[in-house]
Length: 408
Image 1 (tube, rainbow, N blue to C red):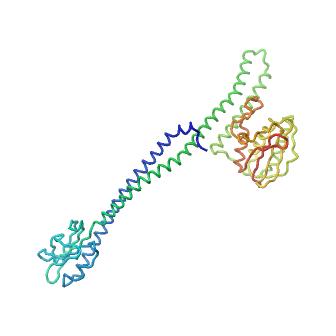
Image 2 (tube, helix red, strand yellow; image 1 turned 135 degrees about the horizontal axis):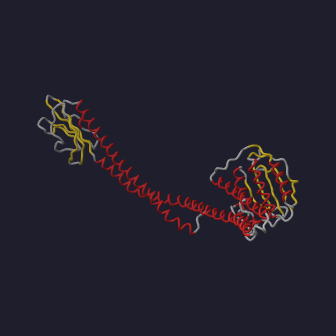
Image 3 (cartoon, one colour; image 1 turned 45 degrees about the horizontal axis):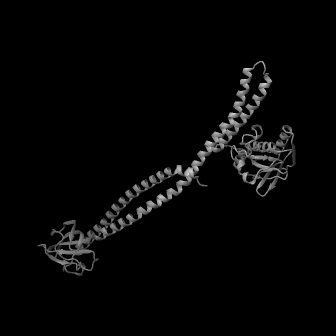
């Protein structure tokens, strides 16, 4: 279900702000992580180059040959520079791929140095070690190019420059798509709450106004109003007010998920027979209970009794002459049917009757119309028991309220 045009226009700025905040938070986080990644990557690659050069320099120094032009000094990786310096600083031997001036000055035996220096072939990291060989001091230099470090770093930079905007676009689209239904749902809930409060205020106003009217008449004409004439309507309106408040509190507990139910084995046929007896004593209708059979469910006997009372009152309110209650076992559990011979309910309105404060005949009087909460409570309590409720056509010609509960 989507929000209507008015809701969409009202929620659009909130949706834009939420999407913008999400993109900003993700964008800043990704930038920080990307910078940290680049620094870590460059540091790791540089350390690897340093370690390779230093290990190679020590390896050559440890295996110093009599002939400085030994093949030991050549045949290394293409990105590696190897040089051997004489005592006077001249180059005695060099790898074939890089030549030129010495990368560092001559070292004495046992000395070592690490430096980064530009050569003809690019930027190199150089490790140097002084050794003694062939009766003379020598300096061994091993350099590793830093070009690969720069190339790898820039490759990652380009990936991030392309990937980060794409990621932010995905975040924006996902946030926009996810936030819309959530905001629409919250708006519908808020609208239902406002409607609920408005309807409750309207329904509570009627009995309060009636009580006030009788009290004002009694005060204005104390000699003409007998106590019984005042007490009877006031008591009726007070009872009606109390029942409505109890219904509202029950629905409030349902909304807050605070409805606590007992879970015991309940002989639901006994509850149905109790309701039949109540209807027979409180109405002039013909109440048929011949279809009641032994049935057991697991639930809260008090709340299920209230369900049956609301269902019975609803049927009696619309029936012309007769009402029927029955129980039977079906594939889904235990089915309770409450039938009446009234005008029935149109198929298009059969789901609406379970909404709060819904009365299909808005023109009928308050005494016959009820508060519009009875069937809403039936639906909520039955759902809390894991059952379902719906409206169908009755064999009596009116409406059939069908309640299905899981059997024991």
